[in-house]
Image (tube, rainbow, N blue to C red; front, side, top):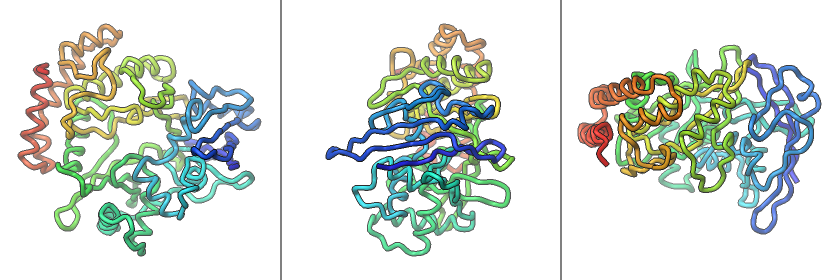
Length: 403
């Protein structure tokens, strides 16, 4: 059995013991039960808010689940995905029998992104996520590429730095937390498995999103030795007051487990219900849908959309993880009404009118005008010419609505 206290770091840096967690021992198939209960002091605190407004309302009693299914999906949000979990396991030397989510939460402690941290009962929050200095980027990238090539590579000081800085961020691709004198960043590395310039393409996509009227985090593209490049994306879970913003994925909010089938309309409906600023967030979500459709961002799964909790409530996070259709999938994860194939601008505008989005046609025109600048923007970020041509053709096809 594993027992943990869940601490919440507020936007002003204060900390509240929000909940208690307990996990039962796993059976032979690795299945386990879990339960979360808000602490009495949290329920009585005027600053308290539900950690998941859909699944975990502010009320006494236990919220129980099997594994980290609903209503406890927000705990999976707190954990990194493939790359970070791999480093977390290596960093703490977790044997195979201790690589399940409860053990990973205990190992993560206060090192994750977002505002939640997990500690043994009675112990206050301690260590926060380690971020390496920008000067270490070359050595961190070397270590990441060694790990990709050889999972049994010897662990030296550089490798230990990667384990510390890279075991918090989510996603499947190599990355690490880094800092400079003013800010903290997620460093996104190229992978040995890349067959296109993923780093340059993502930088270009973020710039196009900004031109299309989407809110995106600040980002920088850095040149390293050996013609290698790293994309830095500024963390949006940190506040200027030294605090944190609680993060909740739409996978958790919609309680979408397993091989879910969800529509963009589901996300818009959720924002109308749970956002503190639906008049801003609903058009932003629609704008991002149009952008994903016309750019070809087919990796639009529910953990690529998040809510952030500020003092006044939940709001839509900046857009991130934006890329053209590098895998030539054509089908999106989220459905556009009833199809995974992206509609053209006119059909997208019709969907907007159907869903009550004011100015839907103008939004589509603005986004289309931005994404058709792909070739020029990608050239600024030194994406190779053959790749520019390939993705520009796909974008032109999408804007012409050919299938």
